[in-house]
Length: 341
Image (cartoon, rainbow, N blue to C red; front, side, top):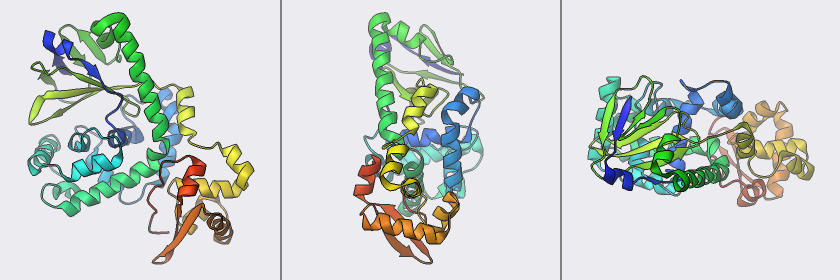
């Protein structure tokens, strides 16, 4: 149980943000990808198809992601080190520039509860190349798992914040804090946050107030705080996500039927797979269960139409969407191409 103790000054400074940004939701999505104590039929209905698709595209670098967010919390808090960012680039720059003391404090906190720091994270304090490698893996995962859906996820979180604002206007702070989530109980002057088998903790805000942030992917509430300054904490709670909401979010961009009518079913499937990060000819052939020769024919047409680019890397042929292809699919950007067949 985590307990957040609020004084009168803290209650006057309760505020809400719609999101901590795409970096935060990307890291939160790793818990949903694995599944957890809050998973069940409802969660499977909302996230099951997304989870299976993303798991099928993970490569050997997923070990880095597992090290950052182990099955048992706490995680290595890249969200705290990256700060709230409008986009992934802003958060990435903040993470790379994080002071050594802050990174060391996070690793020490991680090691205290897990008894060791994984080798993939050990060099983060002193070695910029290690930070860049970890960041590259997270960015590639974001491009495949979260980026294609980010615009709709952000719209959903904006709507969640607006709904909570209405509750605040109608029922005050008491009504807001009482309605966040079944695992968050408001017994004035304390918010009790049920966090499963995590360690017990008490937080005195010292007049700073409390920031409330909804999350699309996080399915259980969490308290995020700086180990060097625990009074500065954020309560992250799960946004309501129904099956209908999820269907709208996962159907990103141009509809499959409209795209198939324009390009033909197979060619539309090739373009969509490339947008999802399936970037080599061989991998596309296996994913769509057609021959490599047929894939080459379809990618040639897409390339001539200016929808994709093709380059050779070692023994592989890699495909990526052009800006025209991204616009056609209504995608913000394309995932990084994989280097191997």
